[in-house]
Image (tube, rainbow, N blue to C red; front, side, top):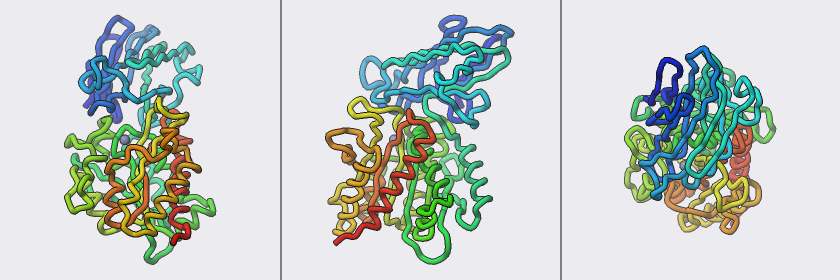
Amino acid sequence: MGTTFENETIVVTSDFETGNGKNIQPIAFDHFRVEVVGDAPGYNHYFGIRIHEKSSERRVIRLEIVPDPDHARTLVPDFYGNLNTKIWYTKDGFDKDWYQFYQLPEFNFEGEGEVKIFRDRYLIQFTTVPGKTVWLTNMNPIPYTQMTRMLNEEAGKHPEILRLGAVGKSVLGREVNLVEISEGTGDKPVILIIAGEHPVEFPGQWSVWGIIRWLISSVPEAVRLRRNYRFYLVPQRNPDGVVAGRTQKNAEGINLSGPSWVGVAEDKEPDGHENRELWTFIKKHPPVGMLNFHGYMGPRGNGDWPCEGCYVPFLEDFSDPAARRRQEILNDILIWETQAVSQHKQLCMVNRGEFLYTPLARRFGAIGCCYEPVDSQGPSVNMKTGVGVLQAMVKALAAAVG
Ligand SMILES: [Zn+2]
């Protein structure tokens, strides 16, 4: 799938699950330039590269990553709106743990790694070791195969609480994993939690993974919630995109978020194969609340650290006054009890276009939000962020209204 440069001494490639990079060019013996493969302007920021030293010599490698010039917003391509602060690496395999590049001195096997981040390029420098491989990226990934493996392990350990199924298959035939978490029998209100519409927005996928781990834990509030609600979680809505390391689209070239959902409340079918499968599922299991996790690379320049994004439906989308009041309460809880302060003047209520939450609000009175955790905070914080956003929603659902 990816692109590979190889000569007698080195391999530089994006050809692995979650890899991204094209036009890999040697500028000098030790200096390579790689272009990101973007999907749209603003979605030209993610890279995943593997480097293997074939020679018997160590060398200082310089890797220059540039945004996709085919999806530039301006004449000078830049990583528009995506302020990167972390480069991640692993030496064990793309589906193993990734570490912060510049916080572990052993990274380069010698200790002289260096990263420079500019508006229009990253410069990454490190020393190779003969026969060794390293993977580098700027979004700490959960590959689809890894997520599927972890979900299967949890399903095996907690069969009485967690069941693994699928919301149909992706365009290329991959199962779209569906996790059901609930304890005990009987009808319960449904909460739907999804991530990965934009495939490389891994912070949101870490958030859902965190929610799954928390919901099956012995934390008393988690036990109470799984007894009171039926949770359906889709941690990777776009598995083909995750595998291909795509920034925005599915295998048909459709953006599964935003415009795909316009008109769906008025009975139009959503655009995109995986969306239609999900919508069929939702109509069978209408939720009272929905969380949709995406993910920023780093803080946006127009907000305060950590500048996580949060979008919510319009209050006018709710015909039931009690549901409208609950959404209003959710908005306040998000503002004051999460990091959803992406724009310090408007707080979380920005960019309220039509998302999946719009037909859910209009058709079922489901409250919800679209939340963007930040990769710079790392997966363990992203996981807790997910739990915090879920706690915000269940508080709003339980609030006395009317
Ligand atoms: Zn997104």
